Image 1 (spheres, rainbow over the protein chains, first blue to last red):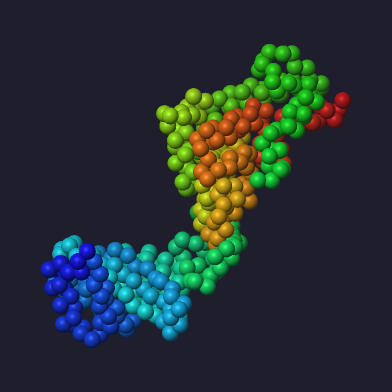
Image 2 (cartoon, chains in turn purple, yellow):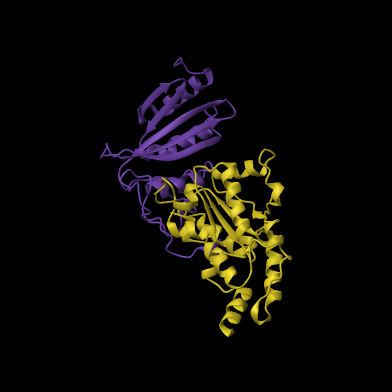
Length: 171
Length: 206
């Protein structure tokens, strides 16, 4: 596989570099896909630029999810978004690293579909998205305790997942 | 699977109880003269007629939780063809169903819905737990999976396997039909059944 970029993605990357320069902490290209790493402070700015700039025009948020890397104690959490542009037919990955207890601004204002993704990321990793309109648990029960996709969450046992309240009235 | 569950599936104590009342479960339905003390032959016969009818039109609830449901669909398809036994009409509404096949693991999020579906099925009803996950949670001893559906609803027949082949599910359904014929339910210990109370009362009187 070649690591060359498609013409539209080359233009998009050049535009992004011109706008943010050194604020893009890292750029890697693998199999024709671009990954950009930004600081949490630039999260909102970079993503809104990705959506609004005509050379990028990422009109769809493919996914947003987290990652827990306990071998990096200074910044153990990662949030990854996959962006898709239907206008140019290209895609890009934007990542950021977070310290324990860190938070990000919500991107539901840019892509409403981020609502479910951010809810799931919060419930699984405990990463708070500030300004999210409805940050409730999505896949576990309402009375669940803990963040199950963190690496220190016990693999076995129904810890936190036991049904403690009768939820049938709410179904 | 524990021993008591195996015993449950074999209905031995039901057959023994029926023998005490003078009924032979192997009888032709309306054939042999069934003499019952205390003049309760009629309700028992009605129960048997109903059980006979029900056993040939067991309509399970149309729902599947995980991969076992694929094998359940195979049983419904033309190769295994459960419509031969009057079970092809899987009802999408619990109010029209006679029981449920819990096919697959049940998450804690899904558990209240499964219990509600069970409660919405009108009596009498029978439950079949299909596959290791529905029986015990299988390898998913994790935060999100119910460790055995029998902790939530009474289960009549357990069909082990991962997943069970359609033949195994078929055998489980045959065992359900045996239970239907003698009107035996997993929830017997939890609630009263009028016809059984009548038999027990007459036995106490004589």
